[in-house]
Length: 194
Image (tube, rainbow, N blue to C red; front, side, top):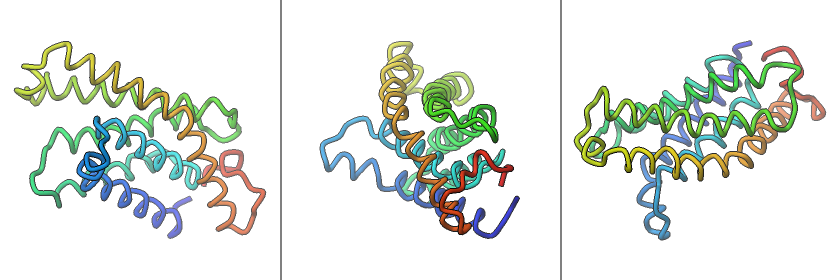
């Protein structure tokens, strides 16, 4: 069910992710962490999982991703491949979560699998789009080694982190939704799609 609370959650989570996309790379670099896209994708999976715990509805994760992507327009230079990469995380998460996190399916491994599939799927789509559609010089010149590094190495790191963050985020979202609905023992995934 579409409620003001659900819409507010989607807006807040998309905005938190969007702000991280604007400032996260510089912040991570300042802390000496390389591979900002890896850690930003892990952060995104956590936020998408929280969102799905609050509102387990087809399309909700895509909307969160689109809101986050829109924040890139506020940056110094808009990179359309990055916009698509951010939105792809939301779409891929939505597709896998809609299949694996249906009401009545609350096994611990399901959100972890959603995170892993999202990590690899979104990164592979980003590379394919950058090379085949956008024909980005950077990605074409980088060749298959750069593509494999992005998908396999980077995707593996995101996937391992997502094994923990996706179930954790889902549980945080479920608890938050239960508290807001006045039912601290409630579990939105076993209830009718809210």
